[in-house]
Length: 554
Image 1: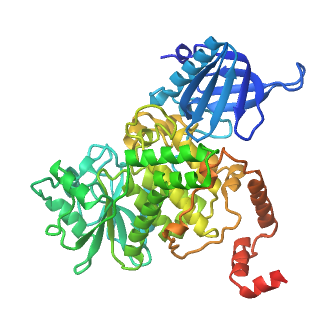
Image 2: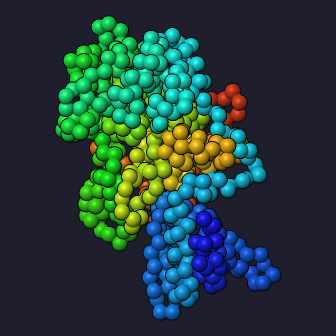
């Protein structure tokens, strides 16, 4: 297939572009294989044109056409929640442009997507892809305990197509036992180590559901694997992200959970989290409510409640809190799973680590966490992020699990403004790139698919771009002060806030807030020479000192 076959009209003059909060711009609209461009010339023929729009076509979620006499209007609803309107002279041109955008935004071949064509001069292809090898993470664990080993049992992806080639498992369990345990777990996702808690040596594991079925089948190797995690007399917790009723239904179709009789040292806790259509529909309803700028207060509050998005945020944070509490306070190891182990399981294990481990709250550590717990762990980004909140296509397997995770991390940053090294801007950038990107890290559904498509050899890594000195400082929190303590979030309903920086990003101007943060950044840099106490520390001390308040009031 050639891109030119999908472009019916490549250029149109005198197009009007409008976007909420910005003045209308008139210019020339151009369609390329991956971008929609609009350039205007404001100073006459002698002045160079200004590019007013540079939109990655993959970012388009829905195209809406409306005829208006001899011309037409196209509304583009983007995956990053932006809404653009194009007024195009000539009905035929309008229909051709709309058809071209729809076709280009729906190209399904991974290797025809923009990351395979993007070649910035400042980056090399190999940069950023090997910053966070699992071997490096394992060495940190091995320096503290000898109870775990790095297994390459999945080196050719035949044991589990959604696991990476290397996984961390109990040292006393050999690869043959792992192969047998994999056959007892859905999709071959046998229990592997997700996190080692250095404070007390407890661990967090993740897996998919066991295939016990209606006859309550057993697997000696699976029982052995989980048994090796605990010492004699110890108790562990299995956090199942499904309801007890959902587990019963799963058992009738071949799935199930770990029965107490076969896993006597493990206690099961049910914490149901939505992961499919209900979560996607909640996202859609929330975006619709946010875009309705003419609504009154009662209607807004009613729509905010009925979409249930904040309830999903609260449930996810509460479950991660429970996992962290089991490890840090109860000193008990934890196994997290739902059905496939690629959605709510990863949401809980990743969030729990942000709560527990200060290294995961640094810019570099957070990138490593995303690599381990989302990308290499097999979250199906291509399926889940195929459409955003505005698509008119019938829902398939889309679900904003990764967005829900980012929202929960934002809640943590909101409650603990000094404890995360990175700012909201990083979370917004990750959301944008998960749905449409020039970089390859969120392509495909798992490491096996990325290897087949040669993603690491033929596309650039987002981490390489983010970690350039000039870029990196844009994503740092100027109030950051390293905090080695566990950050226990409040999960009371009053504490869960709507993430306005995302959901209202294109609806109202953030100019004054951006200027304020810019000034904070400037002050932090000017008051933080090497060896001096951080601005975050000084501000924290001032806020915690009642005498300082009195002094300031004077």
